Image (cartoon, rainbow, N blue to C red):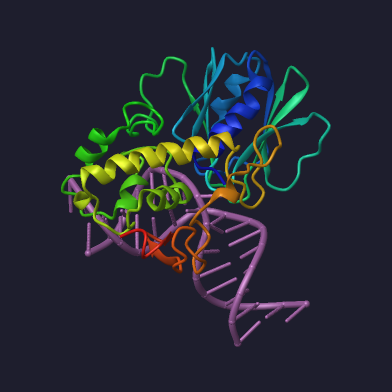
Length: 270
DNA sequence: AAAGACACCTGTCCGC
DNA sequence: TGCGGACAGGTGTCTT
């Protein structure tokens, strides 16, 4: 489910219900996620939630006794439920809050994670080596063009590399390359600066637009407020292999790059 | 050093 | 109806 817009949607949905609340109890029914949920997570019990932040696709929940770092993996979701709602299959973790609500983590594939970080931690193995946020000013044409020089890697895989820029997953990589008219298989080092200029603008546009729409609902994604996202109806190429290009009516081609589906228009993406 | 393959895990869909 | 295989929004690690 989650790329950056879905994570941002989740954050915005849960934030009003969490900020200022005390975490009364943490119930870990299934600790075997991407990394095992460590016992230290229980240090957050009795602590007040000071703030929520997002970095890349991670959600950071800060307390005086440390920071919880959530990652939703491929199929994770966080939502608020009433404290009498029984846990269903794949509801792996509950946070009981002082307002009588439960923050509930659901993740069928268990590729997500809940990590604990000490309050005085100066480094984080997961966050320290990440590239810039795509919606920040640091992510601009000069930066991306410089990083791409001499790269033989396909541009789609280049922009999906979290060390280059965070938050561009498979859906939005396909969409932004289509919008920018760039063939996903082109070597990143051979794309002109003018095209990078357009690509940067398209990445920002597609992510901002998807956040406005509450993310892309595929399968059963809902934001933290329980509402579905509406960006799926605006997808131009993702999941549309074999269909007609919205611009030129050519048949959209579907290939695989790095074991991920790539869809593009052979005519528009020159 | 860089690029590609593979791993983690469950659910769903499609063809036989 | 059942079964096998491919595939799904991510990303760290191992192999070339």
